[in-house]
Length: 452
RNA sequence: GCCCGCGUAGGGUAGUGGUCAUCCUCACGGCUUGUGGAGCCGUGGAGGCGGGUUCGACUCUCGCCGCGGGCCCCA
Image 1 (cartoon, rainbow, N blue to C red):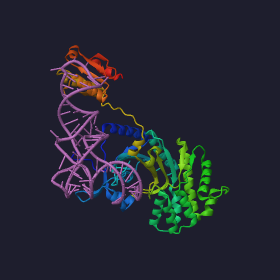
Image 2: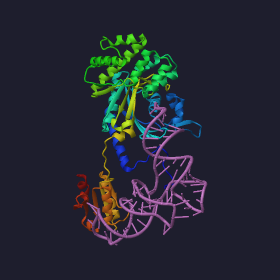
Image 3: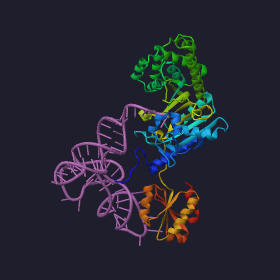
Image 4: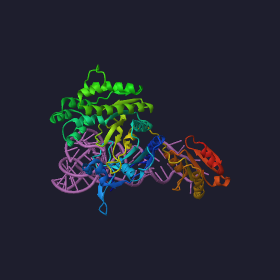
């Protein structure tokens, strides 16, 4: 056994895994860039309070937090949204709006490792700053969807609006802590929610509505129709959720019958925004959405449309991306700024991704024979200069051993270079798949190996 | 933090309270210093760590660590 091993929850990546990862990274970068987003980078560690400001002091126990030699309270970043918004507040806020940013980096959380959950993991994400309306929300959702599809994975898109649940829960007459507890229970679903609502004496009409959202009133909606049609279907949806009669004429009227004026208006506005967003999504070519008004995401800072992208083939841990609209710049001490964005779990997406990568480390391997290493090295250098990945034997091995080596690595061409070849100014090029050998003039080697 | 399962060479495995721990694969060398894939020969490499029981522990036992699964959590 080795004397040292990896820290818990971390991984090493062998060349094949790394090739797969890089292939997916390339595809995702392309997806972001196709939408006009530009990549930014932030430090691997930040001030601890950046994250406590965003998420509260409880998160410290999940952080790799430490003190540096000048007693600064720091932490490895557990996520990238807060650093990106910090960067925005500090330096990017004067850029033309809307500002389209994306990022990729490793993050760290001190958690119990599980399948698809590591202590060091990689995240992609995008933030769209200064696009206040549903058009921006739709763009971000479409981009997230595009990322997962670019990976070659089947997707399932869930879209909701936090405002609906927000209003309902706020209308429950209880304290802040209980409110956030209710969010968590809604996300989780099940008996506990019912019991808790009962304990806090929620009005029956509210309790029922909240429970309905929790069980997932999430019919699939084809985005073929126009906005009016969507709105109409929403009416049906809410009717279903609330148990209203289908005969009731107008959505807003039904709302007002059930809730107080302010609540009804707010819910109506949220539904309206959601409907408009879905209308725009259709324009992006996204044609199937699960409308899920119970998407809570467990995140306090969301303020509008929220969504999740799943890759169903991953089973229980199928959520690969999630995001929505939030007000974080202000929380972090900046100007109030409309932002919508998402995060994408790279490691998890890779599990569902369909990537093919070249395994051979080079396209040619030069075999020196009987002391021709310098000439062989020079031939390799010429090939490399022409962009052909090339290796040279470094062990002074026999031709047979070299061919065996080349074969094992999957390098397609072996270039034999001995005294006989040098005398004639040629090299013997062997195609490893067919076994065919041809003599090629040294100054034609690049051309010969380029055409492939 | 809790519950369940697992832990023998780089990978996959067999077996045992008692000689130097089995086999496959792998890496390196040789048979073969001008020609690969097969074969043969050789070399290398292991019972996670620590304590206990025992004359003796890889084997039994306890703790820890790690891995897998579930719970909690998931900014």
